[in-house]
Length: 101
Length: 172
Image (cartoon, rainbow over all chains, first blue to last red; front, side):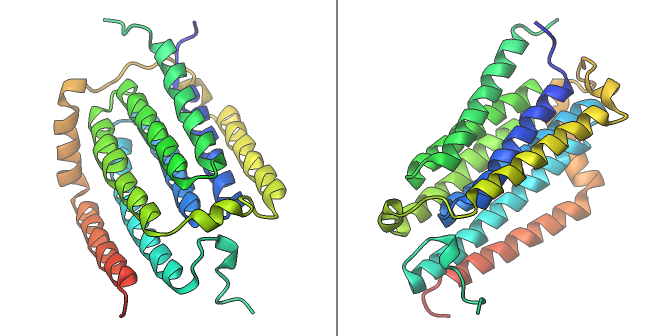
């Protein structure tokens, strides 16, 4: 079989990214939208680590920062979700229209 | 020494990751989505190991599959999702959203194919850095070159923690 090159990893990461974007754009449930954002961040991480095999350790160091960012984003996003659910008793994205008129 | 069955494991792990991703965005029950996301995260940790990045693979398992997913499952238990399971799961613009996302993906692959670095990308690579000292190298990198970034990341975590506590409080 053909050897696995960096290009293969980039294609897998692009596919994961597309799945995440589809989830963000089409799902109505806020929890699943947040999970799709995690998918997108993981695709970015896979890209960074794949490139770090070519050009040194910087990519891996940066992927640690991306994971930190994902943790912060998940905590704040889920906090907002709880606050919103307490007021509106729903988790649908298209019912979040307080700033719309 | 040449590693064994690398091609097979690459296709197995990336197939599992993509299967988990598809399940995340199609399942009706949010708990099933969370379990599928854990499958994706573990498969990605395996891919990191294949890319000679054992430290990132460990952080991925401990922080993502251990920490963030527990947070998700707690919130799924806190909010009552039974009503939203009976409703429509996809919004009205799902066709155009899917087309736009797939178009973005095709654009990415085109950029890779047309890139000037393509001969570098399709060459077979052996890791430049020894796997055994990867964690030490990461420590030198994080506490040396990227120390300022590291401090900013800790500040970001502090701010996010305060924000999450304030947001989830009953009365502010």
